[in-house]
Structure formats: structure tokens, C-alpha cells
Length: 130
Image 1 (cartoon, rainbow, N blue to C red):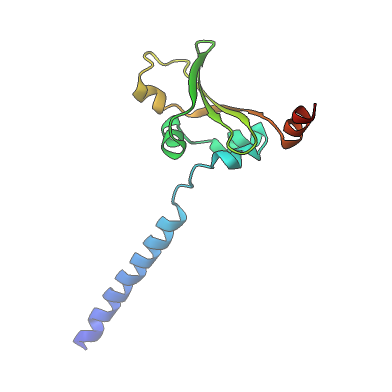
Image 2 (image 1 turned 90 degrees about the horizontal axis):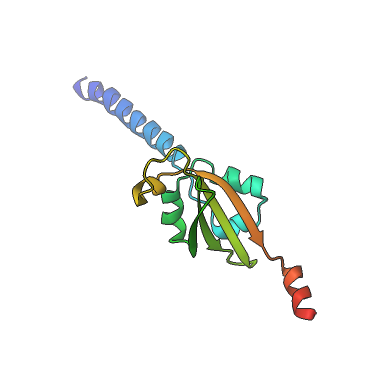
């Protein structure tokens, strides 16, 4: 009788552990889309794909941008080379309300907008033919 009284709590503990693992695996944060993936999207869909990510997330996933600039004193812009289509991918962050633009405060900014300036293969072929 004594061993069967230990089986029920052990089984419950095992069940709870399995349920916790299943829940945790289903709530893992999704990875940042690749630059190649963004090239295939419209600007609206690219913004949706990057919604919820911060500049730090993108820097960790893609590395340092090829260029960085401030625009209209309220935007921070990172420019990445478009890897397959040519052109560039601009990631804009709203800095309005930041008192100091430090590396830490800029890294915490959420994505505000995506600007895709891509060269299509047809445009490249036409330019090469003329």
C-alpha cells in the first residue's frame, strides 16, 4: 500500500512537468525574420513582421547596419544592404521623447517603420541592357 501512495504524487509531478514544458515551448519568442525574408514582403507586412522587436533584437540577429543616421531629429534610421535583390532596407525608430540618445537608449527602441528600397532583378537586367 505504501508504494502505491507514492505513485500518485509522482505521476502528478510528472504530469505537471510535462505540461509546463509544453507550455514553455509553445511560448518561445519567435526569431527575428531574416533580411532575405523582409525583401519578399511589402513595407506594411515588413513592419508587421518586425512588430514587437527592438533595435537590440535586430542588432543581435543581423549585426551592425552598413549605415546609421538621424532623420528629422525624431527618427533614428539603420540601413542594411538588401542581400539578394540589391538596394537597401531602412529600419526606422521613433526617438521622440528620448532625453539622451545613448547607445543603450537607442538599442531599446521598438521598430517604428520599414523602408524597402530594392532593385528588382528586372530593373537590374534593363539597366545592364541599356
